[in-house]
Length: 417
Image (cartoon, rainbow, N blue to C red; front, side, top):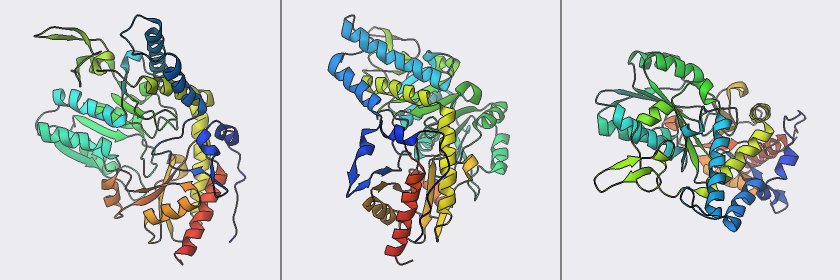
């Protein structure tokens, strides 16, 4: 078997970046770890790990509530992270940046707080066939509660949103559109700015799941023109348990709180409560302080690289991966060409079950995801139970693609294809 290796230059110094990630230094049976599951969760650089460790070792205290030095320092670092996120996504104000547990929590906040106040019987809620379950289930629950109607934008064979479906649902003047910026399965990069403009003309509120966009490309919420945008920390070098909901200030101000309790109040009496100003109205209870601080440092790391540079690196890398994978017999890749393709590449190999394939790849110390990727409607669309997904990031290079392809040939030999 001839193994072709990559020669194209990268927009990033991958070797230098890998050195920043302790977990990537490990080997198993003499084989280095090839981590290709950043679509599920990214690895963490030393700077993020040390920032969280420093919090617990040197200034662990609750935020917003203490007047002593440790609490004031914790509050300052936590709120600095909010400002970093604001700048990272180009929000108008840090008050529009709400910390949540993850994208799922952010989308549920919109569904329960904005949705219950604004969606009524026979109103139309639209989402697409390529959505993650996190951007499907909250809207189904909202429709069950309110009597709203669900409509869908289907996906074409080559992984794009069906334009004829878009036209049909626009005529219904839907109350809400929920759409992913980048598919976690197909890698399709959707035209968020264009969709937001078109649906706003129909009077629609636009909610964007940016979990697979924010780690990989510039996200400018003002340029996108959507009404709510959800991102998560753990896919963008940050810790688990912290995410962000950005919302238009005027919408957030009009929404009731999602959770009630401490830290989201201005004053509480036995018979009534006055709520805090944004963003704290939506941040009840003690937050994930170390997670927020870690997310801020992750934003620093990505900002230093430059998100345009990150996108260019991954565009070149995914282009190379699609090229190499196309040479593997019996392998089918799902999704559009590299120019319109994010960092996730999903495929099937003959009739090998994706779980079996992932197990074989793991024997080569290659970590990939196998399953329906929390996108079962999309699996049904393509009449498959599951795919294998290799999702790339800043610490991946063409050598990782070559290692993956070599292992896929080995899998073919094992299954005697």
